[in-house]
Length: 273
Image: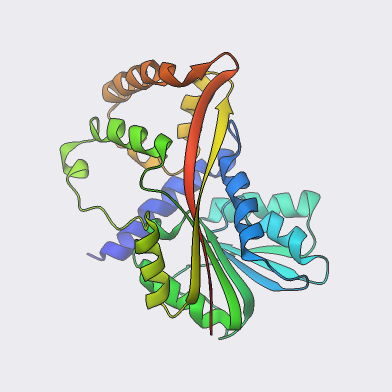
């Protein structure tokens, strides 16, 4: 048994199955916080940037725009389908200064000091060995380089109530499994970055409200990101019961223009001395 390898296989499978619709159903909250991460990182024009666990380009595309035509952004992801979808988008519409590679965040195939900036959006807690990944971020950064990370806050309104509801329907053995650190409070995230060697860590907490057109769009969106891994563990009758329960609960957030969901994120930046 190799738990890290098994976890990677599970996560790759989930995100490969979600790749076609990832951040493409309902409001694009990953894209919103991807832009905010790029803005907070203060990336210089012409910089060379690495986007780890790039997915469908929520960080990659705004970073490519920020560095300009003389800069370059390399996105990596461990899901072949995510890479395939994003490569196709780059080929169809650009930007020409972006590329996408299949690669493991914990084993970056780049020389030391290759990048001016390393970014990663909402991925750290999925990694079996997140501290190893942070050490790799540090290694491939140039001295004076910048790291930027986003995670969901522990008190994120949407995640809090959705998570509680999901746990009630999971098979007992999955609900009782030890949960990895989600790096979801400023002290925990700051400590992890400092232990990796980063200095001058700054973390801001940001809220943003997103509106889904209707209940079915909201439900479909749950299958388009990481929560899918839990939905897939439910037997069909349980899943139907869970859906009915969730569609009832979501009425509390319904307004005239749709379903409103508030997401709270931590945006952390730091420097390599």
